[in-house]
Each structure stands twice: as structure tokens, then as C-alpha cells.
Image 1 (cartoon, rainbow, N blue to C red):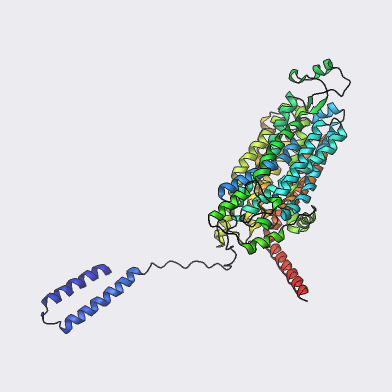
Image 2 (cartoon, one colour):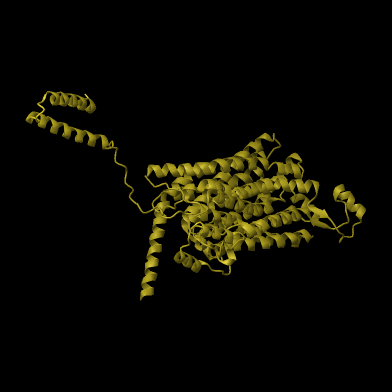
Length: 586
């Protein structure tokens, strides 16, 4: 019988007893029954108010690892707009590098040089693409993202104008290096924007968008370059500086371009127009996000980092009663420093053992990508007789695989992070940074990346051997699709992990990534054609893939020992800080 039924029976008995009692006063039996009834009511009310007991929750061993303040004051829509803008800015670097891949044969013929010499322009571009971010990334972590963007695009626009006006191999070689120096810094800055605004638990999907420009640039740009090269030529006919007659030039050029004579590169005119059109809005409206300067984005930046709308935004916040913490603002102003760009910060990241082994693996993987891109023009031209346009279309499978990777890999990375966090009872709080000192972030990330690396290497081997005979195009197309998905996905995961390991300097960490990626990629670009001519496509790509597989030992070691390495680094840094403080007191 339930407690409610017992109460009802007691009330019935009590009511009957009271009805039978003498009206002059209660008897001792009636008083006893009333007291019993009252005590039962109190006990039952207490039972009804007491919540059901639940199993005790696991206690968090580190209650102070979640930040007390929100990580970013920007709204979700603002974060997405900022990161997409950075991604489009980062697109200029790989686009400029690969837009003339399909035109390599035509450039060699027009400049009367060999294909190997034209490939050197690709190699030097990649070398500068790796070295230039070393200078601009550390500068942006101290002076702000906006001044860094202004410097990058100014150099890039000047280089495009000069390239559009040049007409010699030496000028092409040197100006391409200047063009690379201007555009390549935007890749590190895009990842810096993510580190400024997004916490580790949400970083997967946002880094995917930030990487979209650098991922799609090498795959879609050759198609654009193929269209320009096929229908306009890599040169645009304008005013004459050559001794050829107009009639001879008219026979060599499409009818729409047969105007008075000298040649200036249409590809570089296109890049110049596009970069100027993008630079104007980014100079006017992109907000400063560097955390050392504006904190969570709610503090006014110095005049060197202010945009057109900052004054309006902060006046609106003041009208809404949102006041600025003056003490924190003064502290942030001390961090702002306009200095000559230097590579010290990037070299520090490269000297870190864990970072180095991860970056080498990522660099070799991207080197395979560059090798395939560079070798495709000659391979498909020789095997299938493709012209520039058809060669460029062979980059579509890589682009399709990369595009699928953008929308899936980031979600997988965030899902695996949440899975390990729940397993370890690690706090998950949106827009709050979490101390990852004891969290196996390497395990959570590399569990996604490692299978993609292995599959990517296998697809490279298969692709190389398919280029030994003119078989059906379905084979290379399928393998290029698989390679695009796996390689870009794995590279994206390691990009996220590098930012996780160096959260205070995301742009510098990404610059270090660019150094090894581009230097190793430059070596692969320079070597792939001679290797293919010496040992054949099959063995050339097999050798690259074997190097790639061997380098995966680095991520495996990081997955096993990463937490210990980070803990040792943190303890070492703490000892140095205490020693410095003690020396200052003395």
C-alpha cells in the first residue's frame, strides 16, 4: 500500500474518531491520534519534497581548467564572416602558385626555355611561400592581423602589376618570388583568425572553412588557368615592343586578341584586378582580432589596427551600457608593438620536437600533392595528347575530393574531441577556452588523420603506375578523387593540432607549417619530372609515397607521448619564469 493510501486511511480513522468524541473536549485517545496524524503528514510532506537520489557524478580532478570569461565577444555570424574573409584572402597564395600549371608548356615555348627551367619558377615560388610567412606571422602576433594584411596585399598588388608588364624569363623568375612573398603570409593569418576567435572544442569545423581557400586554390586555380591559357594565351597582346609584324602576330593569336603588338601576361592582369577588388573592402571593414591587442575583441585597437567601422561599433557598445575594463585595456596596449618582422618565433616552433615531427609528415604529404600537380601537365599531355584546358580539367577530381573533405573532416575532428572529453569527464563549454595540459589532444586528432594518410599514400602509388600506360581515364580520376579527400583531410587535421599545441601564437605555428610544407614541396616539384624521366612515373610516385608512409611514425609517436612532451615543456617554461622572477627580485 502506498503512502498516499495510508494517509487516506488515517484521515478516515481520525475523522471517525473525532465524530464519535464528546463535544466538551478531546479525550486522550483523540489527542494521541491527532498528534500521530500531524507527525505522519510532516513526514510524508518531507518525503514528497525530497528529490530522487541519482548516482553521484564523477568529480572533475581539475576544476579550474575552464576559463571564467568568454573566449570571444564576436557573434557566431561575425566569426563566420571573419574566417571566410581570411579564407578567401589565403586563396591568393595557392591560386597564384598553381594558376599557370596548365600553361607551363606554352610558357616554355613562348620564352624559348626548357620545361625544367619553367618548373624552377614553381620551385622558387614555393620556397618563398615557405619563408615569407616566417616574417609576417610573428609580426602579426605583436602588431595585429590588420597591419599584416595591409603589408601582404600591398606587396602582392605591386608584384602582379610588374609581372603583367614584364616579358622575360629572368623577370618572371624574380617577380614570381616577390608575388609569393606578398601572398603567402595570408595563409598563416587565416589560421591566426581562427585561433583568435575559436576554442579547441569547436575548432574543427571553423578551421575547415579557414582552410578552404588554401585547399581549393591548388585544385580549382589550374582550371581557371587552363581556360585563360587556352583561349587567351598566357600573354595578352597589347602594344608593340617586338619586331614581328602585326600580321604574323595575328596568325598566332585568337582573333579577339589580335590588337597592336607586345605581350603582357593575361594571367597576371587577372590576378591584379582580383586582388585590388578584394583589398579595398578588407582594408575598410575587417576588424582586428589579435588577442594580445584586443583581447576577446571587445577592447578598442590602436590606430594602426583600427578599421572604418570600429568607432561606430564601440560607440554603440557604450550606449548599450557595455563599459571597457580600463585596467585590462592598458595591459593590452602594452602588448602592442610595431617591430621589424623577424622569423624568431617561427624558428622556435620548428625547434620544438613534437611540432617538427608533425610538420615533416604534413610537409611530405603536401609535397606529394605539389608533385602530382606539377607532373600532371607533362604526363597527360604525353599519354593522352591533352591540351592546356583538358589538363586543367584533370584537377577537378582532386578539387571534388577536397571539397567533400572540407564538409566532413572538421565534423569528425570535433566529434572525436567530444568523445574523448566525455570518456575522460573533461569539461565541454562553448566559447570558453580550456587548458589542454592533461587532455590527450594528439590522440583525439591523429586518430582521424592517420587512416587518411595511409589511404592517401596508397592512392599515390596506384596513380603513378596508372600513368605508365594510356589506360582508361576512369582509373586516374578515381584515385585523384581519393587522394584529394584523404590528403587534404589529413593535412587539415594536423593544421588544427598545430594550433592546439601553440594556442597563444596560431599564426606563427601556421607559418612554421608553411616553411616545411613549401620547402619539401619545392624539392618534390623540382624532382618529379627528372625522376619520372629517369625511372618512370610508377617508381617516381612510389618513392614519394614510401617517404610519406615512413614519415607517419612522427604522428604515431606524438599520439603516444604527446601529453608527456607538453607537460615537460610546460614545467620547463614555469621553471624559467620563476628563475627570471627570482633574478628580477635579486
